[in-house]
Image 1: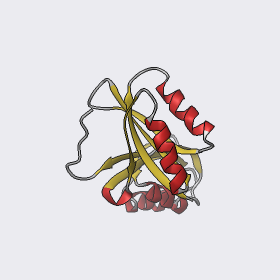
Image 2 (image 1 turned 45 degrees about the horizontal axis):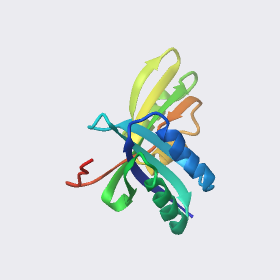
Image 3 (image 1 turned 90 degrees about the horizontal axis):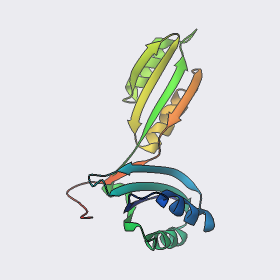
Length: 164
């Protein structure tokens, strides 16, 4: 079993996300990460899905998803040819904490301290899912108050473009 990522371009209509997620549920696939966003075309939405499974079942769910009426295009994201990123916001208590050590970890991971107020520090990190995981492991000794992690977004490198 391995994590796999797909991008689906769909018509920007009400209920499309429900149909996509229902298809995954009916096939017994868990969605590890789901991000929906607008595109340069206001009539088209981009859905990025990360799931865990074997190759055969992954291709089967892609074929089934491609059959949805609103589907315009679907493709598997190959990490070696793509950029896959997540956004993390995490709030730490600074009361009794070694703030300088926390700031150093934040800087070392390429994150930013975006707010420091009222005994709290909020850090922001945009990075690959593996780097986000590593950052969370590195800061586990600090008192985390709250965390919000986006789903993955993915884009192929180079001059690849899709005419929808």
